[in-house]
Image (tube, rainbow, N blue to C red; front, side):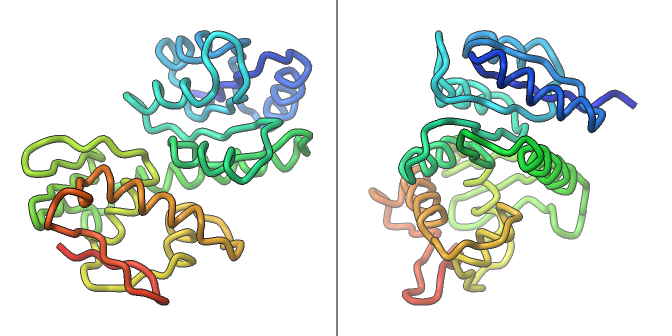
Length: 231
């Protein structure tokens, strides 16, 4: 069995070495990148299972690295950054990150989050024929195996979290999901009484589906309750 490979992209060698030390103790293989271009190249040339990215890096920042990774890969991404505002966190999550930690950080907490994201990725990739059917509804074709979405015959580029939200809603038409339920199901974490993350993802998902200019509204808001699929 090949070792699980973690990419650590940070322009501070001391931080990268500290992370690699703790992950190495867990049996993970670590590849380090000192800037954004090296990080993108590492993902292109190695079988990376999870990436830990700083945001403020030379050459390409973490946001751009995430954007380029998401064009071809669905591996879990954890931001580890000194940028600690809610806007920074939401921006990172909307761009496709799966988790966000701020510096200074507890290395053992980071290891725990890495383990959690890898477990979640493994569960999502397990075949489950009864729950992984292609969904066709209202001009949408949602393919969970390819993790692709077609809208009236044209591809819709979604982040992994946006896809998971859409598929969960579409797989249970007419069922209303609260923000708490969506967060726990998609992020796999305890809901922290802040619906902004879910709300921002829903807003971006609606925009990508063209709901602003289309009569078809696939995601319906049930005020005071949550969201439902309206295919």
